Length: 220
Image 1 (cartoon, rainbow, N blue to C red):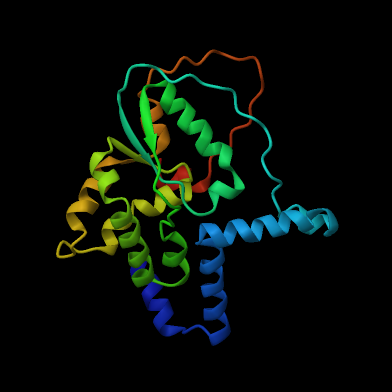
Image 2 (cartoon, one colour):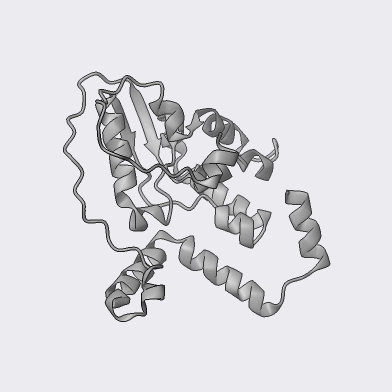
């Protein structure tokens, strides 16, 4: 895929306008602060826009999650990387995951700031930009990576991109030892949750489950 992208980009250079649009997409969707501000503005004007456009602006999550008491037994430490889009669009996803992990005996730590994994850069701006984002993420969380027993991201698209991190680096890079530790501890949340003894009770409620294409194809 990487070779194909590089070949196509070389044979069919993008126009100035196309390059600027791609940069703008990365700037807005790949920066948690900018994205949160843009989403808040969109939500403010949501009641006044056409119905078709309104469907593309997700409302703010208001449902409160049930209180969960952490277990007294500590099994390990998890580094939960929040990413740049999900904290604004679906904050309850990470809250629910953290509650499950706490109940199973894991303590959760998050980076001091929201970090973009670089997936958008890889898709839109090329491997060099993606590598720069990966270096930033690894170096920003260096101590937490070394101390964590597992590293999770609940956004499956981001998790899928993390699996490609080794292709961005060479063994001569300064980050290679840290990257090796990172990859050994990186897990899809389901990989960890299915090993835990969670007190989940059967329910008669009907639930809808949607498996993202990244989970079905990349993380299966």
